[in-house]
Image (cartoon, rainbow, N blue to C red; front, side):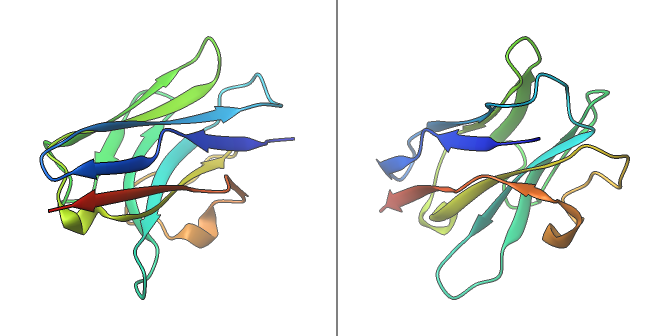
Length: 126
């Protein structure tokens, strides 16, 4: 079983940084694809970054050069380092995982991921 728990969200001023964490508290095995999604009020959930088990990563155009996705395989924790934050980055951030082989890119819809965390709120004020 997979149980994802996010942490690290909060309020920050524009230009600031945050690091989100997503721990799988039940499974010790690396997942084929892990991803960060976000959802702003009134908007659809969108893929922010993905990381495949072989290290291949993708990013949404809006966050390229500012966000970095990484994973600590020792404790099966996924991270999202966010820098140069702006108000458009505000939203609920969710961690997602798929254990089976799948297309692992930011364009992959949320429906392709069977496992989700509860979300962590990120608020950027200008």
